Length: 197
Image (tube, rainbow, N blue to C red; front, top):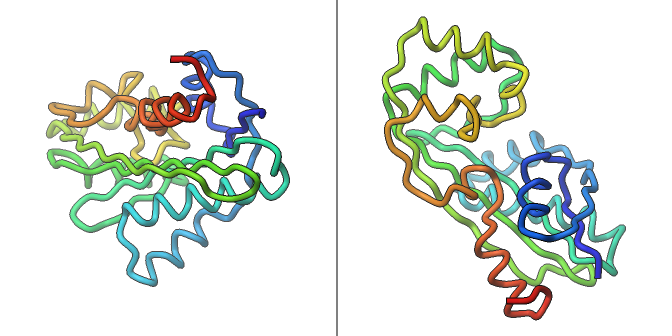
């Protein structure tokens, strides 16, 4: 059974490969923004939004690849009841970072696995990150240096890069912050005999 990641995320693909797996990346071709907006309109909680979007991605690819193990992931950032989306412009990213500055936000990272085009396992992990009260000057310099790298990041930072300097405290699994709850996934695969332990 091939492992298919319903995503083109380089970091998720890298994490799976570093763990000794050989996944294939397949773009799920879903309108995440529309799905997220619909879920928000229904009053869905951040954890449930992450889970629903991860399942949507997995299902979309699993319908085309029913013979494979398909893994879908999604991440939702919530702070003070507000859900953040990926910024479309550098100005939008600045606004996001200003809103997060000096506060604690939560990242919900969901993963859903499909076999035979059916959901067979899911997990939602949470991390809490507290950002320094960074200066306007550093914020602007940070964005200028890192925009190309962070433009597709929901929090406008990559903690595996210079973004780590934005934070005073982090609570939660590092893999969860990177967008893939790897340890629960590997534990599940091990109990199913998919990987050696």
